[in-house]
Length: 150
Length: 126
Image 1 (cartoon, rainbow over the protein chains, first blue to last red):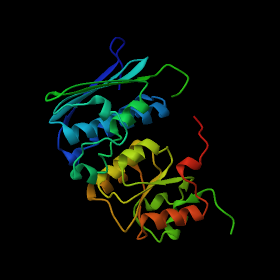
Image 2: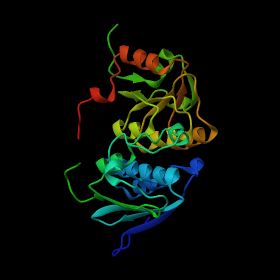
Image 3: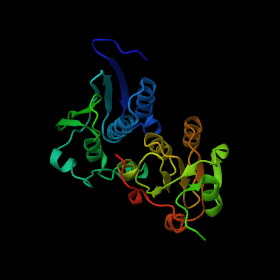
Image 4: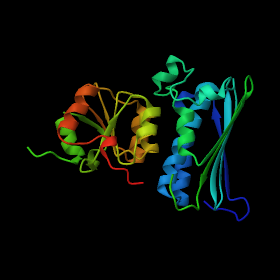
């Protein structure tokens, strides 16, 4: 895996909504990439958790989504854009325990209302925007060059 | 009997009368703490690298979650066993899978009474 000087590493993953059988494959691949590059292990875990929760959200709620991994010497950035129902009330969605999950989602071990709070807790910077009826976008950033750990 | 602060997977297997689904060759692996939940989001929130994950969730998400948080092994409770996809994934990632007939509470109690702490019992290193 090589990083070009200008843009760093850029990789795009497509996630299909409702595809519970493959749920988690993208974040498993992302973790492998981060390990291959040799990112600090504490950042790998935080980024993998965030990627996994974000991926599960697409599988559970959206029709499809694209997760883009961008790594530069300074930062690791995950961008997720999905086409789906969007989120009506972002403040409520960010509350631990708030969930609109179905029984099927809960049987997968998810849908406990911890996903977005988990992503935010692990990230150095977290942005979310959503248009109800259209979809949701997440921006998740991890700083790579700071010595202090979150 | 003196309390243990760590246990090998072999000792855990014997204590829980567990069946090894995969990872027979990794039973000398040392476990220092454990945590149990059927909610993978909770595991992602409280899990720490090296954890022994106890769960009743038998689909492949349990293995994916264990891999994401660098769990040392999974013990399935209530006699549950993961699906084929989960077993294949665990083999590929080198995560031993065990299955015990004990229920969650009993499994936790047996391990805790041996001295194996939970995640919260550990001092935070970072």
